[in-house]
Image 1: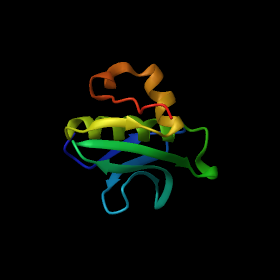
Image 2: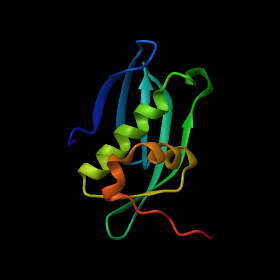
Image 3: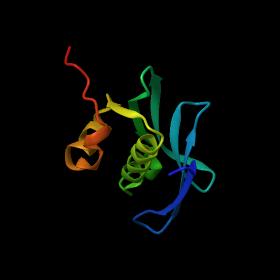
Image 4: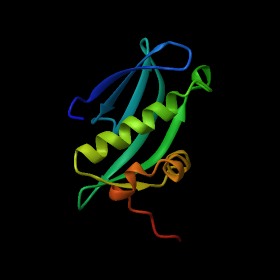
Length: 111
């Protein structure tokens, strides 16, 4: 997935644009001009990407936008050769049922 942007349809047929915002260290899901959801990350040595936080704005909840966003972000990270380190509870939950990312997954050590 070399294109840093994708168009998807959400559950209510609203066009969702998903993009990587390297300056903000986040992936963003846009509905119109509004950022409906975003997933923050930190880049670490050894080609690791640590997903720290995912937010869906209240006006856009329960539409599956965050799920589309996280799937796209994880696919993009893998396609760019990154090892995925999930700290965000939403990303952790997604990965529990989507094992196609197991080959590039690094579970954080428990504190």
